[in-house]
Every structure is written in structure tokens, then in C-alpha cells.
Image (cartoon, rainbow, N blue to C red; front, side, top):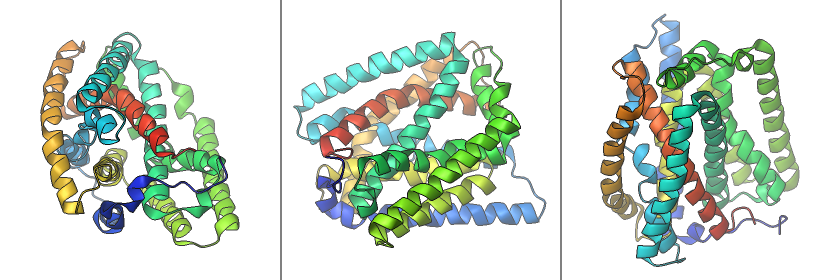
Length: 342
């Protein structure tokens, strides 16, 4: 089972044939533009203002970022697993119990919750890239299950690990702001110690090079391998050179979220990519609005009273953490349904 190429039904949809034009190339262009702008600012000795740093995250509230999981309740029905009513009920219960439990963990133990959010995001963002490579790009070098597992770790690593290497103080400030909402301090000095950062950096770099080399030996310089290698290099460059909030916000919107939107839209086999995106925006609007209401309610639960840009950004990211756990459960179910890890 683990030594054959992944074949996913969404690859046959018109949306998948438009993947390069609609998702991949725009994401590459956006990331390269952000890298170039950051380099120009550094050469000019100009540091981006807080408003600029938080701008990508602010955009993600209503564009692609937060909304990308707002049709999860329809996914089982669209995948043909159940009726629409049962789909909404089942996913609603998943969100209620997993999201509720994770919200409770933040309230009573914010430091473990914060660290688990970093780990969960690492796995989930790698999960999304593995699906895109196997379903939309075609990746014969990932035909073995173990290569797909290691690629998940390699592709999810840059957003979560590389900023810790290049911007440890800013990384720590962001995570400390999450924990600070609950009246706690971030007492994990070991995570930011030079030895820990060096071990993580060397480990991720070694895994990256070994995985790409192994894929090359198996399949040669196929298009799928070239895309994988090029995207991996671009992600390392983005997160090594661009301040973390800007890099993560950009990636969240134009890389991870857009790919997921196209994946979910592909389940319906739409007539065109444009039609799929319009349909997704229509279907996601009600739950996005509800999420914004819940975000406001969640803000009333935290002990702090967020008012600064940093605190408001922290509140948003913690809320994203709460909804990420049930979202990952839905995506993992869809992975299994489509045979991504078969």
C-alpha cells in the first residue's frame, strides 16, 4: 500500500488543471515579492512598522485565512460520505468538542497550549502541501508513504522552525503575547537557547536535503520533484529573510489557505476555477461571519483586555488555534477518504 503513487480524484477535476495558474504561481509571486520588499527595506535601513507587520494577518481575517475552514461542515457531504444534514451535525460536534476542549486548555494551561499550536500548525501546513504535491502537481518521487510523511515534516517546518532561527526575539514576543492574554509568562527558555535552535535548524535542513535527494534518486528531475524542490527552497528563503508576522501572514493567506480552498472546491468538480472560488466564497460567508462573532465572544473570556495591536493579533491567533484543531480533524478525514496516505 505504501509503494504506489497517490491518486486523488480531485486531480481529474478542471480545477486541478488550473492549479498552477490560480494557486501555485500567485503564491510563488507573492512570496518572492515579499522577500524582495523585505530585502529592499533592510538595505535601506528601514524596519516595517507594526501596522505593516500585522497587515497580512489582518487581511486573513476575511480573505482566505480564517474563511478557508468555513465550509468544513459541508465536506463529508460533498465527498459523498453522508447527507448534508448529517455532515453539518457531525462536523459541528467535532468543532464543539475539540474546539471547546482546546479553548479550555488555553484558559488553564496556555503555555502547553501555545507549544501544541506550533506543533499542530507544523503538521497541518505540511499536510496541506503533501496533498497539493500529490493531487495537483503529480509527485512520483513521493510514491512511498514514508517519503510523504517526511515531506510533511519538511514542508511544514519552515513556517514554524525557520523564524525561530532567524528571528528568535520576535518569535518569542509573538508566542509570549499569546500566553500573556491569560496572565502567564512564557517560561520556556530552553526553546530559544542557541543549542536548541541549532539542533532544530540542522535537523530540518538535513531532513530537507535528504528527502529531496531521496526523491531525486527515485524519480529523477520530474516536474513534481522540481516543483517540490523549488517551493521548499522558496519557503526557506521567505522565513529566513522576512519578519515572522509578515511571512506567516502571507503564507497563511496565499499559500496554505488558497490551496485548501481549491482542494475543497475540487470535490464538487466545478466547471471552472473561477466558478469554484465564487462558490466557495458564497458557502464560506455564513460561517466566517459566525467565526467573527465567536472571536468577539472569545475575547470576553480571556483574562486580559486586548487593546494594543500586539494583543489583538495574539487574540486572533489564539482563536485560530482553537478552530485549527477541529479543522485538522476534518482535513485528516478527507486525506483518508482520498487515499493521500494509502
